[in-house]
Length: 292
Length: 232
Image (cartoon, rainbow over all chains, first blue to last red; front, side):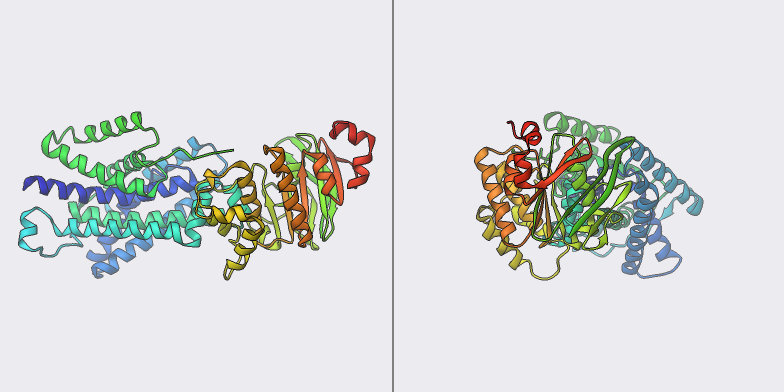
């Protein structure tokens, strides 16, 4: 029975990773950059939701929506101010900027909210049927997993069925050709940051609901893990981010349970290294078919 | 219809296009020929907005396009089939065509039907990912994609590049069909023979300058051009 408890917490953790990884992978797919500040958007999402519930006394759902809205704006502003001027710059310059933005967000959060951990009241706490409870399935885990599935399905439909979604895929393949089609590439990149950041807010709220504490660096480790998950699944691939996130969460949870709590992170990254040695494009990443 | 006047384009410090002027009248096929590096593709990319000119004007139906971004130019009625085709390899044939109609509102079906009528092969492969198509099919897809915006002026950059002779013939046949159906065409080609034989008029580019121009027949008959570009 303990096994199931670890499995559920692994899937739940993995779902959070997957939601974050989706943001990483979409931004990478289109802007071809690693947005290392993505993890810190999660933290901002958590704080906004916290403030909205504790200080403004807004209901849970409204608080989550507010947090998504703030993060969406934040993501678009960061992209416009910090990354857009670097569109023609080397990828190293963009990477360093992203790391700078990450520190900026952490320090800004420290200034505003201080270093003392905030106690985050779970937004997904409700009584579970007894037999599920005895299996170790928490209400937070149920909500987290369900959110991840809904997001995954919605995003897949968006990218494959809608005009803007298809335009995103076109931009991710060839920005020049996309412009020739009449697609505004800058607007498409902004939209991607908007979606990724809104998802990060959801991930932040879910993460804090699972762990109940919130500090300015709350987002960094999950951010790095989710980045790992995105690479693990094949960066640029939406199903890859989902699969990579879930597997990473399960591996981490199992490693903590059965091997060593201290070594869990090392094991997670070791698995990544092995996968990349065997399949450098990640689990679902594929080399572009090209035939001339 | 299109009037390019004294166009100057730089790549950094390199002066790639030096005061090029030419025009395309409604209903014509006009070709720009010249050796590799003469500035043919640079000219097309500048007209379509992918590159910026430093000076000169690009008038399309009396409107200056030289300061518009590429994504706004399509809706003016210009479409470019870029060099190397540049179809979206991971998207299906039909999705590629849908992207071609990105600026269009309303149902895509009439435009799709037209393109499929012109390129039956694309219809057979509509659900296939473009990366699995042959080079000739990809060229057809690139042309079909450009036609989805119902352009008034279709610009083609080296449509015959890398294709087997039989496919080159097919592509030129299609160009003539499109022309007969009323599309004005600006064609850039290294295959001067084929290009001049379908063109109403042509311009010869050499190191970023127009060095001669005339009707297709005139240019084909000119001894210098024969010597330089037609292998005779």
